[in-house]
Image (cartoon, rainbow, N blue to C red):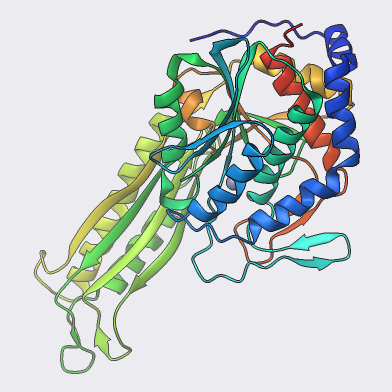
Length: 405
Ligand SMILES: [Zn+2]
């Protein structure tokens, strides 16, 4: 793997920002926030549910191509734009996920309320995608020549059941050429995500004979069994350190109000800062749901095998952590100091989990502005001050890639 040198110091950053090419890039950012926001609105209004990101990807690809990048779409659906440096063996990769958690048919036209933009997906990850489009344009306007190759990607499969497949494919294609990876996700510039939270996602299903609500009353009920299991697992204490969490995210089953269902299903998300703790939580979850099934069969005096519990994995995210003395953190810290931006190190579950779990230097950063309500229909974004986020990305990427003089 290519290594990063800790070349960026305070002084060198002021020098970098004063380089005529960099100065042109920064000036373009200063006067172009509206252009970036317009791209954000356009991209957000193109639906991109999980596994259906192609149309939004095409629009982003055009924006990359218009700025002189070499563009292609890989077999997974990642939209990849390359800006070769003088040393193409070393790559700085920035990725923003194209997909949203919202199913096809969700109303996603962008509304305005005072300074705010309202639409599902406007922040997560409209802001990441628009920031990459803005970065592509700023790099083109600057005409900066870099040592390392800069790769910008709109990647697929970050949300829900996508299982980070886009980022996994990028690791396969770029492998040892990767010098640093930056996931651009959401708006906030007050953090640097340096630790990836591990997660495991499952669908648990209980099946049984079903029946008529009156004439078969007393038969074991898969919904009741699942409810018992959910209650049992909910009383398992979650450790505060390593911090861990669980969520029963969807529940379904049954066909009508007067039928005993033959099936119930829930989707569960388990997370922890620690992989070993996560394995314990998974074991506790399986045990609790099995105990729920047993309670239901005992309560209804049914044979032990009257209900069946099944588990299906919906994806696994590995944990990973960037060492505190990583040159990548030093570079971002220097950029933040130069821009007067205050930030703290943070943990989250993002595309950066994959490179971090492989020992490749990686972080997740926000694109600028403010937002909230992500993964809800009330999601909002306020672009005021987004220039800061764009400059932060621009200076970080140029600093990492090195100016070729
Ligand atoms: Zn996101």
